[in-house]
Amino acid sequence: MLTAICCLIIGGAQVTAPKITAATVGANDLSPATLDELAIARAATAKYHDIARAEADGYINVNAYESGEGFHFVKPPLIDATFSPGEPEVLLYAPVPNENRLELVAVEYAIPLPLSANPPEGFSGDADQWRRNEEIGIWELTAWVWLHNSNGMFAHTNPRVP
Image (cartoon, rainbow, N blue to C red; front, side, top):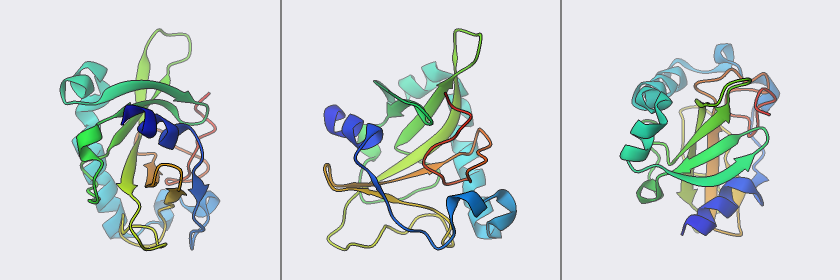
């Protein structure tokens, strides 16, 4: 299962065309409902700035690093057909320059592919950008709730992550 999750995270995902492009999705472009849901994600994951707490709560470092995303810590029991802003399936950590530590930068949601070709319902509105990974049968969505992303809140990668 962890191998499949690693494959999901580090490659093969296709971007589903959003109604709003990643470059245009900033905090000012999001609905109040979406901003509330992002606040839920932040509140639920604030404790995970301490990686030991994330690991204690079942997140596993799958040793997958992707430029523009960071290290992936996955909680396999959360990978189901349910989207919950406060329960991201993946936490993304990036190295802190000139320090020997990682910082929490984003969360990712992973939903098994339904029979439908449509992306799952996620955050309110139409700004989120689900990516379909046919190889392992999962939709994924990144939300940059802890590190500003000039590409947009829901862009797949962040130029600030080496």
